[in-house]
Image 1 (cartoon, one colour):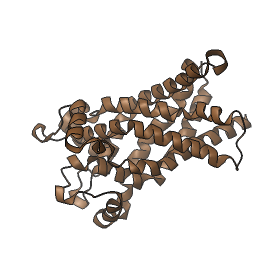
Image 2: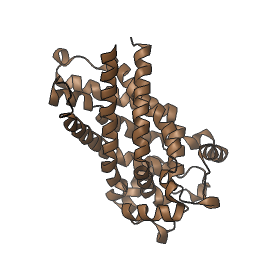
Image 3: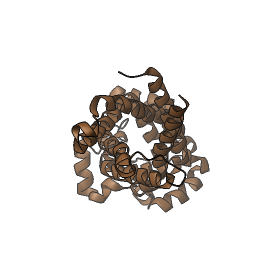
Length: 301
């Protein structure tokens, strides 16, 4: 059914390329999360809210120190390794379950098979890594410095939230996360069939690499924008864990979504989304680098 060696190879290749890209883009990701969540942050008053991307990049180093741009990155890498690596590894397994040759079933069913494989892989790995994902969001959204920080690190975050809310608190926002990850991964892994449709079976060269990178970027931006409202809702829900009931703004994920639309309008769902387009360069690099490494390993066999 599947090769253990192939599984481990995919796990390692996906994880290494993913951690590299995440570390490079950590400042972009942190600013995005702050802009998404500052509306419900107890640390940021109305008068002190970040006005946008430029304002955030100017204020974070001066108020929290330059290293604060990478706050939570170690947790993100710890989260990203199993999440992204398992996505790639399980995608191969799910492809064997869902994908049939285009010659046998036609383009539409072949394409839907790839979408199902990508979505199922994302949902499977999310269940395992969610407490790390939750902790990364809370660490990145923590704008305090010194003794004013909410959490000193991953372990401190897990302990405090678990003490206040139990395991349920560490999984708050899980439902919209599943919906978003299925939408995002389904689009993300459309890269494989689109690559074959656009380029056929031609071998990549250094001259054609920008074309592959461009396709990967287009796929990632489209997938991320489709899933972004789910991402905003889940992160807003995460911010409520550990708070007393009377201080919580949202009763549920659905209430969160309707409240954002009512109070902030549709643009409230897309706060910080501009960073995704910049971050897409790193995500596209992951797809292409993973593809290159996979081909290199296949050649050595």
